[in-house]
Amino acid sequence: MQAKKTDLVQGTLDLLVLKTVAQGPIHGYGIAQRILVTSREMLQVQQGSLYPALHRLERKGLIQAEWRESGNGPMAKYYSLTEAGQTRLRDEMEQWRRYSSAIELVLES
Image 1 (tube, rainbow, N blue to C red):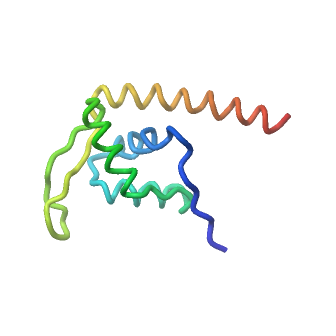
Image 2: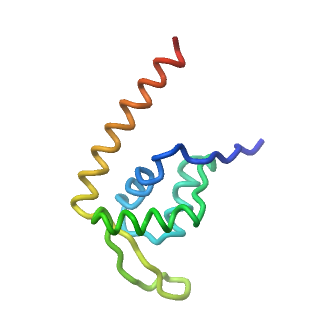
């Protein structure tokens, strides 16, 4: 039985992108694939959501981009985390843990 793909919870895309990019420079398609694989195919990020998020994070100075050879064809834009992005990722992860713990308390009551 295949797991049903789930839409991302509002506000989680930036967190997932920052966490994925923190693992090392990666291009947009790779980000979407890594999130899909890591989530055991439960979370699928659509291009129409991913690329605006990447541009937004870049404008905020949380990630930076550089064009590189992709290894299998044309040049690709690779994203990496900035120092500000590392700080934001830590803050967002802590906030997510508090939020999900509170939801778990309600669900278990």
